[in-house]
Length: 403
Image (cartoon, rainbow, N blue to C red; front, side):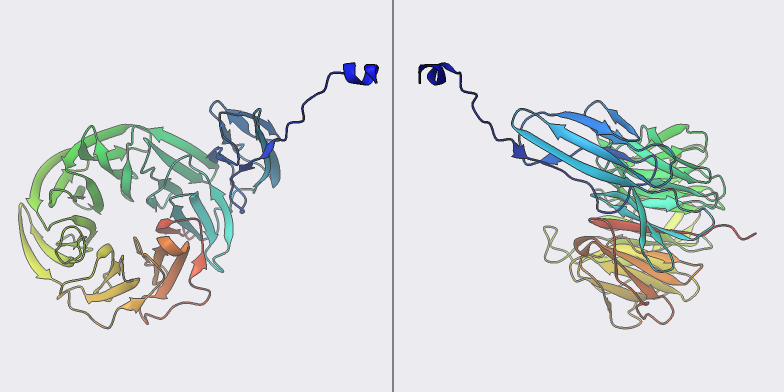
């Protein structure tokens, strides 16, 4: 008994079971994934078993190119331990059409354009709000909470980060010069437009208060930027990166679309009679004539309009209604309703018209899905809406060049 009593007792400590949050879909090469650990508190040590790199601060970076494989991520401290296996898929073929969805919570989700299945996920290390592609097979995605632009090249596959692009909101690519333009909600206290040239050179110009929507006149090399919080639209010389004029548009001017001949600019007033602004929203058509502008048409009051897409072939303007889960179908000339609004999934955000297929893609943020309509018949296509990443805000469709 004396011997037993003299043996020191080792206290038993039960570790909390933690979880490292990763997507259920495979990640694509070059993904940047900050580890998010739940289940226990405090700082932790992280470890990696498998391909890729674990950087300081618990940031995992997938290898630049690989066949299908996996990596084991481990995180733990004195009170908890967690682990997860992350799948890595090979890059998609650059010879197939692809759909890219900007998921605010997950990154850039890549879908097959045929059956809408998910090929993989490009984690960008930030919070994407928009995405755009150019004919050369580059896909750019914003970070609306950070300072970097992610650029994915399809052939040969690569993922690069361009610093100096703060709080990116909307994005557009000039198919003529291949420059990438991003509106910045806030850059040094003001809204701005950032240009990233193909060689990575970055330039920025102040545009107004809280830059949101964007439209490019490629023929005239002009960029239009909507400044939501002062109700103006800035016109920027794309080559010189300077504001050549600014004009009053509508309150809370948000999304923009430009006619193919550059003569009419469509804008959305992102307001609602039931919101803090206590004024109805609307769509407007602004006639452009050199340095002069005039309001050519205004829609009837809209519930809470947000995004806009122009079908120039059928003279139709599609407007997403944020609160009603609807899509207004307006005549592009008069801005009168052509038919009753289309019902869609919850919180429709920035719509995209794919001219090659005549399909209208609508990301639904609150449903984690993308709806798709035939823009001519206005009928939902088979297999739509389809699941995508968490809180999708924008869609881009890329088609390989025909031989």
